[in-house]
Length: 123
Image (tube, rainbow, N blue to C red):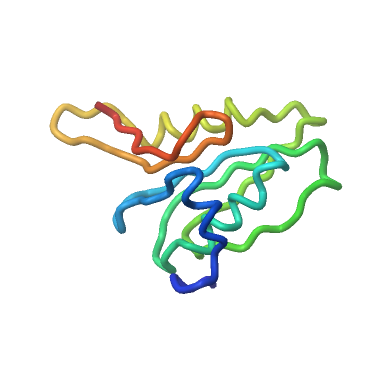
């Protein structure tokens, strides 16, 4: 388990504008080139953080285990098996951001290549 006072290279978090609220579910998504940023973000999360990480790599030999809070799941997607980062992110978001008449759902997300981190909402 990581603690919220882990040492994190500040430049990484500043460059993606990472600042979720304490109650936010988080989503991190990227490729092998994103692993250092994903590690830095995970190290900054509190132990009770909840969310999902998707990392797309070429094949099984490219998997480099990533530790995070116990309620943040890491899923490795293998290009050589036809697994897609975009499809996985879209599917996860469709489950986490259902449209309900009386309730708004949100996720704080950073998706490599999609700009700064931001809140995504069902409304």
